[in-house]
Length: 209
Length: 232
Image 1 (cartoon, each protein chain N blue to C red):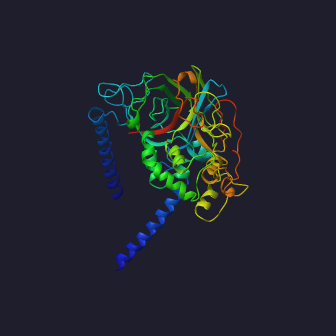
Image 2: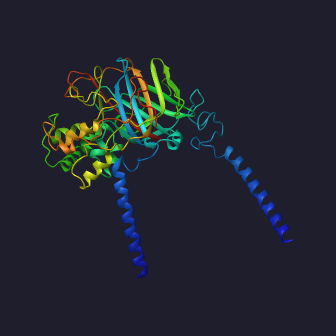
Image 3: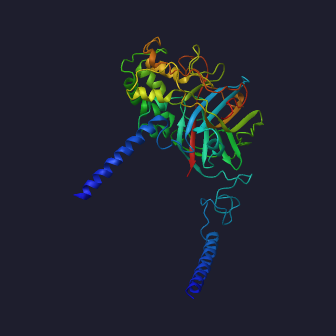
């Protein structure tokens, strides 16, 4: 008898929930349609696009509407790894390049002298201020014509190709002194190459493991 | 009294947890993007196999272990990958190439003039009035390359091309070693990334500027960089 009572109660509650759910759905379509709810509703012709209220949809029917806000940025390799300090890295990632030198050059010079207190100059002939100034603008230079390399012994900073040992280059610039021979234990990490072969053809990177 | 003791213990644990976080965050990228679907692991820009082309590579979501982690890694439809090109050395983007996932494909827009530049460059809208070119996203076994209008496109898992004995360097920085090993250990060995690769004719870009690079002052240069942006 008790069991029957419970079943009746559950059935009643169940149908009440079902009813509420349906009513709620109807409300959403008519009243709560917005251009940012991730649902195709109202008179939208795509998800959150088209119709009388929202931005037009891409002709493919795909939705490319909306505003995107920066979370990460990268130009040259190893800048964040080698020169980042806590707090500063997050700020760096959301600073436009044209403001980076003003914001970060002096901090990077301090970090350079912290990493190598005996720093005077490097194989590129840059003193601490010149080197940190160059690095603080975190963009990669890319040559319009000719060799594109981070540093190949002849050309310097004309791009960045796969397979280049950019960390040894960076270590030598920080620790190696004017002729690159100072602190020999700190200028070569003992990992001379990648663990997979690159292709000479598109997409150039090696297949995944 | 008992209560304050308890708070002291909780406070102490908090400090321990915080310092552990600081150390782990120090290894790679900044704390707020580390390990997220918008975390840029690496960026490459170089002359293609055809010397009349440029290649841009953005690697995101680094340090994916082989197997399931790589098979299940996906591009985020709310994250825009944007290659920026500055032709006149004012460090402001003149052109961008955008890439974003929809469905099973990566869609590319540009090179085209962005809606927001310079100080406003932290914002982007997708440049749907420029030509859209798409490639099906590759999997480990199904490699898809699109070639449209002389442009080649790829998006999918690739081997992480970066190599460095990161652990040893952190040990050196912590003061527990004074030099690298002659036989280093590649921290990135056996790891994968999600890559976006585009190769395009140099003729699609305006000329660069001379006098930018003091080591090659006569060679016209571009400033290039990559950004990840999330839909708000």
